Amino acid sequence: MRFDLLLKDGHVIDPKNHVDGPADVAVAAGQIAAVGQDIPADSARQVLDVAGLYVVPGLVDIHTHLYATPGHRHAWAGDYSILPDGFSFRSGVTTMVDTGSAGWRNFEDFRYRVLDRCQTRVFALLNIVGLGMVATEMEQNVHDMDVQQAVRTMKEHADLIVGMKTAHYSGPEWVSVDRALAAGRQVQLPTMVDFGHFCPERPYYELVTQRLAAGDISTHMYLASVPWVDRQGKVPEFFHQARARGVIFDVGHGAGSFVFRNAVPSIQQGFYPDSISTDLHALSMNAAMMDMTTVMSKFLVMGMPLPEVIRAATTNPAQQIGHPELGHLGAGAPADIAVLRVLAGHFAYRDVAGGCLGGDRRLLCELTLKAGAVVWDWNSRTGTDYRLLGPRYGLRDVDQILLP
View 1: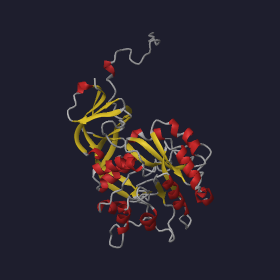
View 2 (view 1 turned 135 degrees about the horizontal axis):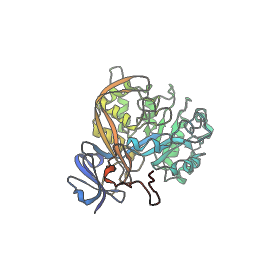
View 3 (view 1 turned 60 degrees about the vertical axis):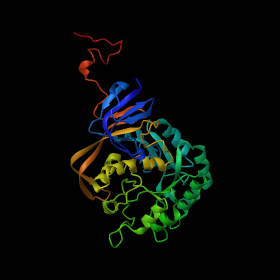
View 4 (view 1 turned 180 degrees about the horizontal axis):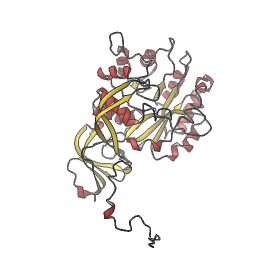
């Protein structure tokens, strides 16, 4: 047999390879082996019927907080972080990026405590602040924003660090942004900016039209205080200018960074996010954000076409973090796959300020493969009817059935 696994009769959406239609997906040795119509069922050891479902690349969530470690109360490096495996696969996510929970002082601890120990494929952005997100007040410490130490750490952990991050800085200066950008440019990696607090000295339009360069990322794009609508109800021209310069706009929903009054006009006017991400942490996971498929569903019901939603959750973020081998179903790519159902019905979605939007569709992850292995099986497609397994199934050789 040529293949280990065959996903049969699904609808494949693979934006990078321009596939959007009925097709089978074959997996061998942990990689995508073939995508096409009518691949023979007898060519695979295991065949899973996915008729009526969408087969897409494994989702890539580039804004999460994973430094779940004791000792840091009420911090994104500590109580507010989560361990990835409990949240990733059940929502179709196979790759996560921690965004700046750790800095150059504690990244090695983060790596050995979390990143090297999980099943989810993980990467990280390095915080320009040496102690990372241990406490919000620490992120104001300009003396801990050491460019050369950050560069050294990025080079030392180049297999995991995919860029720089600055967040929550509230001063009137550009110092946190400028130093993060300086470190990132020395190693030719992007910088993600969580802009912190706005002030007249640091207007948002200056960030995206003058400070950030091509490949740099403005996250929390639909934060309430980002000026998305002008007096005529239009998306301001500076957003289009920033995009033309190559600046990336990332959702980063989170617990406080997404309102429909900004997102709806953006989508209606065709200004789609470059990447859809969750800002997953302990404060957002059970609130309006919930999970990756919920965030994607919000964009679906706002009017963003499903293929574009998939693009913003797969191909685009994989490119943004410098891992183009991910986020697509081309032959030879890692067999990271999400199988999604589009539920039809009456659904409602919340934003972080209590705003609500109704819709008639919702995405549900039924199956997830990571490197060819089934890691989430919501509808038990990989199981066998227990009546066909014989009276002793589940027992080991040393087990005995004792009857009275």
